[in-house]
Amino acid sequence: MRIGVYGGTFNPPHLGHITAARAVFELLKLDKLLLIPDSQPPHKPLPKGSPTAHQRLELTRLAGEQLGLEEKVETLDIELRRGGRSYTADTLAAVRELYPDDELWLLMGTDMFLTLHTWREPERIMALAGIAAFGRSETDTEELFAVQRELLYRMCPTARIFTLTVPGVVDVSSTDLRDSLAKGGGSYYLAPAVYGAILRDKLYGTDADLKALPLEKLRPVALSFLKHKRIPHVLGAEQEAIRLALRYGADVGRARVAALLHDCTKKLEMDEQTALCRRYGIQLDELEQHALKLLHAKTGAAIARDIFGVDDEIYTAIFWHTTGHANMTLLEKVMYLADYIEPTRSFPGVDELRAACNEDLDKGLRMGLEMTIQEMHDRGNPVHSATLEADEYLKGN
Ligand code: ATP
Image (cartoon, rainbow, N blue to C red; front, top):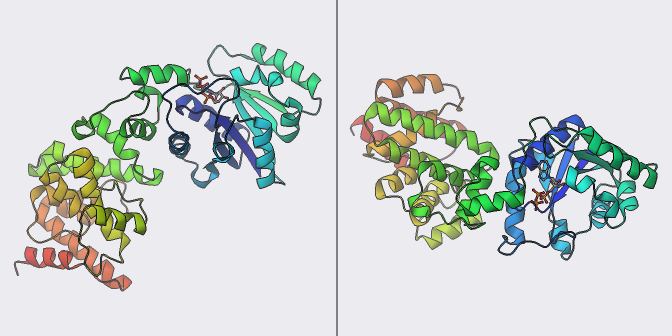
């Protein structure tokens, strides 16, 4: 395999890092990319008030996910675990142990490339990995690379050096970005989920009131809770919720908030879900105790209320979005169906369900409930009593 190793302080990781990483990944035809946040950069101290190592790791992991490379990108904590000053030669040696037979390439921007000869053990670095250097701004041109390339080849004649210009280079530094964030800006240079995590955890001097977030801030915060692959679904649910709310006279703002937060605990495992149920006093019936899929609606509603201060209408719309229940409110129906038919859904019958939802909300709801009941029967799974009651209620029994 050809593996890229991209280290940095990533304080925070921004679109400059992501754009460069994507360009190198494609140009060098990498099979894998390792993002490695450093513990203590050797050349500069971490600024006061920086996030904890764990938080930087989490931001880097989120930023890496936005590359859309799935399991081809991994964020490693090897420098954070090693602690102390992070020397690249030691890190590459550790990566070499993990991947003894693979080809390594060390990714770095111009600033790092131009000082590489002054790092600790540059010859060892160049023996362990090829160097992939890229410009950080439009002005970082080939002439700038040429002198340094020659110097490094003289120092290490067997070195492999690849310099490139990143298409659409994003000229930003973490230092400038931290300043902008503290002044209420900065979102432009960050992947939305990374910006959301910064707001959520009040990093870099941000101080958003999570209980009164406008939609444009709630959206990135909501995305920061999700696995990357679920982002299109949640954004799709928001769009569908707007459409259904307008069509049937529900509160559009509330529908959007419910849709953005409806899956906010979806990625949690069973033990985390049950811990939240205990914390929020959520009673589980026999079926729910074993069905992970049924818990996220309840824990998601609890988090939405506790952290984001949603009102009762939004709370119940999230709470019932998976099972439905008898005599649902208008917002509950909108949320249930937005989740079911949002534009990225594709399952047999979805177009018929969409047509029914357009014709009449209760007709769509009944069709959705019956499709779920049928699917559960087909799979040999028990159907939740609330779903059966919702169906009976609509039939008028
Ligand atoms: P600082 O402002 O503290 O210098 P930084 O933005 O340079 O921060 P680091 O995390 O220290 O961020 O950089 C990690 C790596 O990413 C380095 O190799 C750096 O050259 C590269 N890099 C940083 N910003 C960009 C950018 N905008 N475009 C391309 N590469 C970048």
